[in-house]
Length: 191
Image (cartoon, rainbow, N blue to C red; front, side):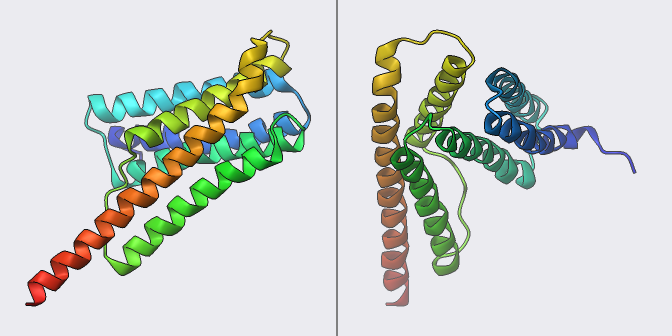
């Protein structure tokens, strides 16, 4: 059976997930131009699947979950291999990973303790992703031979660390409040 048009964004997302492998290989072997090109293709595919899903209302639960996971997998892979190559500080990679781990653990805990929830990123979460992508691109461009401002290379890790920590704390506070509001509502209902 052929795929319906509604599945095109999901197929594009799946292809973006597959791009993680050659990007990881390119970064591992320090072939930054190739990795950069594939990273760009992944970015275009992300924009395309999002456009198609919104424009033609080809949204799906799978796409709502898989699209941000594909983006996160791409970013985590880039951080990991750039750290292994000595381009990103180990402490920064660990901070980025810790934030994601806290968010996933919090979402799972909320799901099992309270019930279903919407996976909507906050504005700070979106800003965090944008800053992390810009930082990874800056490092890859620099390693590919494109001159980057020295100040950006020096202060970039600190900006990423600040926004990553702020975004992680924001999610903890937001979901903590949501959890507590649900508990208060339960207590009021039980009276």
